[in-house]
Image 1 (cartoon, rainbow, N blue to C red):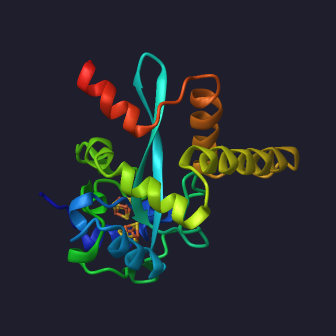
Image 2: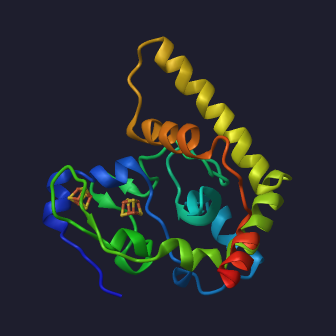
Image 3: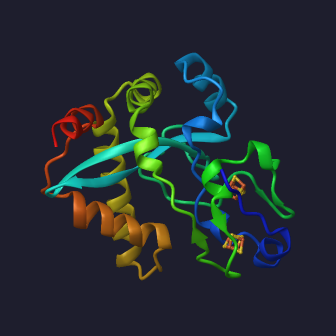
Length: 205
Ligand code: SF4
Ligand code: SF4
């Protein structure tokens, strides 16, 4: 996989992208997908189970869980994230060596100080779809709830907080604006299909 590094430019920038959100891993960043191995990684405190909603067919939506560099103050299960800064961001840049960095971070080509920088195309969702079962079981392990119920409760929490901010004229972060777009605009009133159903449907379509 190609990787893009420009220490000089990112130093001048101060990590605008890392302040916005921890970058996303690809499955190949992990030696094993045995749940016990992933639990060991998660319990080190630097990675969260996160993910994103995806429109996949005719207004249906699903949620593809994946692993991301944890955001400061975020929980292990951070499905509807507040965003960054990333826990690995220090005053001197990313704390992780290049070989330990999430692959999606290395796919961002530094092109503009302050960002947004160009992201190289990689089908992240499709790569993670294969591992959704493992991640859903880990969500259950940590929260004792099914993934969709965690999504629903985290959306409700975030919407309440966003409304409070709006009522007090407190500006919203980029992630909060995005959350409103995604979660109020796209998800509400559309049918949800779990990743397993999506995999089956993809075999049909
Ligand atoms: S926003 Fe661009 S220039 Fe700034 S740290 Fe990120 S990749 Fe580097
Ligand atoms: S892991 Fe490193 S490169 Fe990725 S968001 Fe965090 S600080 Fe930035």
